[in-house]
Image 1 (tube, rainbow, N blue to C red):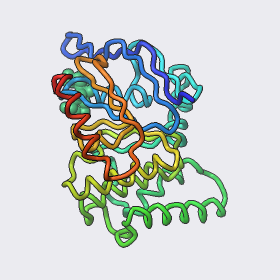
Image 2 (cartoon, protein in one colour):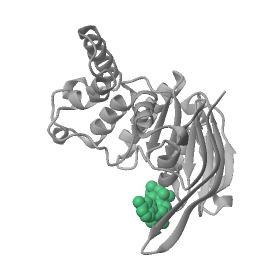
Image 3 (cartoon, rainbow, N blue to C red):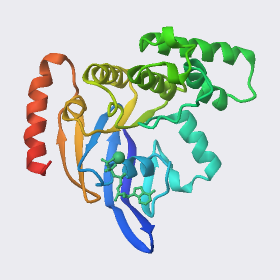
Length: 256
Ligand SMILES: Nc1ncnc2c1ncn2[C@@H]1O[C@H](COP(=O)(O)OP(=O)(O)OP(=O)(O)O)[C@@H](O)[C@H]1O
Ligand SMILES: [Mg+2]
C-alpha cells in the first residue's frame, strides 16, 4: 500500500522579492513499512521536502496524500491533529522544552493527543513511555533536565517522543547529524528496529552509512529527484559493507 503519494510538488520561497524555486515538481511515493533516505547537496531542498510532505509547511503547488488523506484539504486543526497522532518527527534542533524533564518531554504529545480523557489513559501513557525509554536505554535519565543528558541520550529521547503516539510514519531530518559514530549507530539500530515493527520512515541524511541502512535512497538536486537506488531491507550487519559499496558507487554517479 502507498502510504505517502506526492504529486507535482513545488515550493517557492520569496526572499527580498526574489523567487527561489526550491522544490520543482517532485513526484514520489513511499510504501507502507518502507524506510526511505533522502540525500543530496546542501541547499538542494531536502529539509524543505520533509517539511512540506509532512504538512509542517505548505506547498506552493501540488498534492500530498498521506494514508488516503489529501493534506492540503485539511484545515489547520485537522492537520495538527494528524501530525500529532499519525506522524512522528525527529529533527536536529529538537524543540524539547527546557523546563521539563526528559520523561515529561516524552509524554507531552500523548497528553496533548488525549486531552480531557480519563485516568486509565494516563496509566497507559506512562507505561508506553517507560517501555520506550527502556528499549532505548535512557531510563536512568528519565528525571534529568534536558540540559543534563548527552547528545545521544537526547536524540534517543527525541525518538521516544516521536513514537509515543504510535505514528504510522516518522519523518527525521538528519537524526544522526550531531552524533558521534557510536551514538549514530545506536540511533540507526533503533530506527531500523521500529521500521521492522512496521513504522514507515522517511529520513534526510548526509551520511552514506546511515542511508545504506534504508530500503531506498533518493538523490535530490536543485529541487528535483535526480535518481533513486533500491537497496532492499537491511537485515543484518554482515551486509553493510556491500550496501555501502553499492551506494557509494551510485552516489559518485549522481555527482555527490
Ligand atoms: N524558510 C525559508 N525561507 C526562505 N528560504 C528558505 C527557507 N528555508 C529554506 N530556504 C532555502 O531553500 C533552499 C533549500 O533549503 P533546505 O533547507 O531545504 O536545504 P537542504 O537540502 O536541507 O540543505 P542542508 O543539507 O544544508 O540541510 C535553500 O536555498 C534555502 O536557503
Ligand atoms: Mg536540511
